[in-house]
Image (cartoon, rainbow, N blue to C red; front, side, top):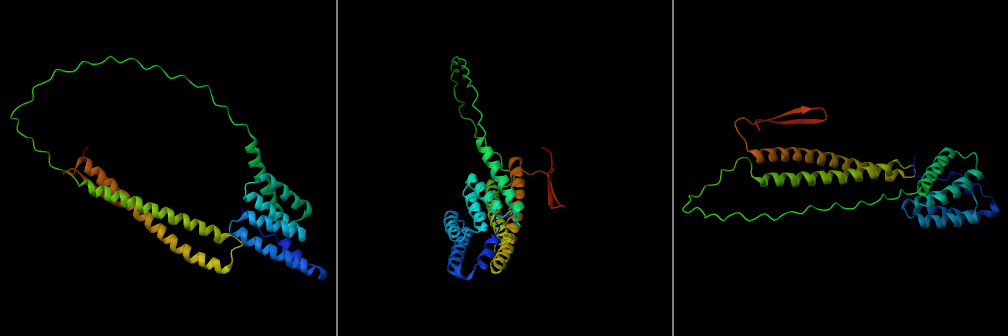
Length: 264
């Protein structure tokens, strides 16, 4: 469901104003255009004030719908329901009546959820008493072994831990970049699908959205590959490679399959 529809009844009413009210209609139209700009920028309080002033000059039903939308965006569901119903009362055969009724039901559901009593916290339980622990007598002191030959450390097996940490950090950075660019792509997609978006803005959103989508897909794919490499490095770093270890890779639907076989 779109977040907002233009009050087309308002536009028609302003266009059909009689000659002796041209100045009033022009003033109302100017206020309407300014309110639309504020609404598009998310400045709903400023848009609400301008819609109200325009309605006082020219009481057209479309203004009531826009006022209700401002209240809904500001989280005032009770006021939104009031103005939506006023709009339907004054324009019963509105072409967007189904949308307005859906908005009324949505706001009423929010109000009903806010009126539900919150569950009371259950009775608190007393903490169990900790058992008393008797002190353990110290072990007898042993004489150190003298003239013991130093035991050399076992040779390192497997890749150096620095390779694992570097690959893991690269994977996290790529996945985070892909998630951010994916979120930006989704936001531009929503703006592109908004019926109020101009054609020039849609062309700009289409070009930038395609670039962001390509970057998001590439970084997510690279991040996933880096994560697989980091996992393989972690396993081989823990136990070290041997003659019985075998790493294989094969294509699979939607990506690839990497397997590590050997005796653990």
